[in-house]
Length: 552
Picture (cartoon, rainbow, N blue to C red):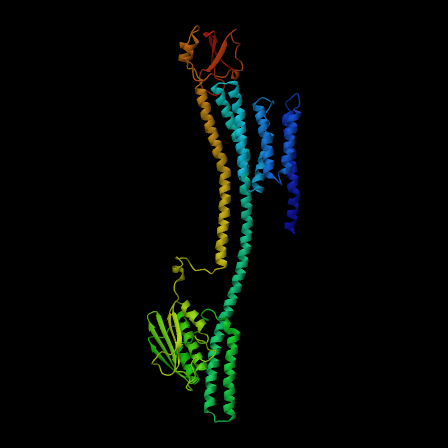
């Protein structure tokens, strides 16, 4: 509720603040134009106010167009004031460029159009500054002074357009970064929920696998006991019939168990603490003819390799009890360092039936999942008919099981193994988040570095040029003393500096002698109003020389 109220308030406050800003800029423009003039500049004021109104209307839907309109009006007014077509230079239109540039960067991802506009404006002001001097034949010093003035105008154009544009771009990327942060948090929340669902599914599959292996093995042993009871009971007796029914029911229950939960087999089924010797002993107690041959210690059933060995023996004994009842089974376990070799061989059914009845499949029932488990640990599993020379026509299962799985991290280049899904999704979003953050930082650096570099470059270039012009306008006193009234102008010019000081800069200069043309030169280069030398020529001869001291 509070969030909705805040958004509603912002929806009303922002347009009101924008309208107040543009109204203030319009009023300031009118006051600035009309404040110090006897005759109100109606046309100039109408053009600037119209440009402000157009920029205000276009700033939301077409921010680049609004910036272009206001920049054009500002540059034209500056050019008119520099050409003395209007009386004063108006600052307010340049202040209006600051919010327009910021809005252009905030609402548009295009930077090149603003750069082109700024370059065209600089070229136009350069043409305005240079063309009058070229046409009227002003001296080099006047031309260079105009060029320095143009550098200041170009700097003003860059600072009022590019700087707020880059700040707007930074604000846009910073806001996007905040939005992406919330999106990442929501995505991570969904990833955690999906991870929890997958963990529940893995736990269910693990429980189903243990149920399948344990209950299937027990049902197979029940069928073996029932078969033994059936064979020992007299023909036609109720006990023999009941034992046969029990054997059939156990076999059908095992098949139903396989159909219901056998498809969920996954992983290693959990580590059971029962050693292989106990498993073989239980099968023997149930009536199976089974023997265990060992070389070396038993593998630890609590380890992944020991649990896999237990699974191999359990599945092999179950298959032998189901598909070769009455067969002799040999379980051989050989320890070789960190590797366990398992071999389970049965002699086949005593009645001579095939060791691979219909429905068992070429790999034996349940053996594909067993092969996946062993190969996942880095071992191997081989199943098939008993090798030549073995007694009977039985079936053999041979496996090589390492004690521990291989180091997957080293195979992946030393990185830690992490589940695909949430981890990989998190790393992907982290990369995207980092990229947006770096882009926002670059925009902030650009918004600070570009104006600072431009300002420093213009100040240094303009200062160096002004210093060179000023020092090239100084007539040293010793040279001035060598010049005498009546000297030929060509001889005098040999002592003069490169540039003459502009007469319009000497506001309180005395009247020139009749029929003469006077030039001015600085006595020394300093700030303020240093004294100047005046040299007046008539008919190619120096007719007057004096020092003019200017008052503050």
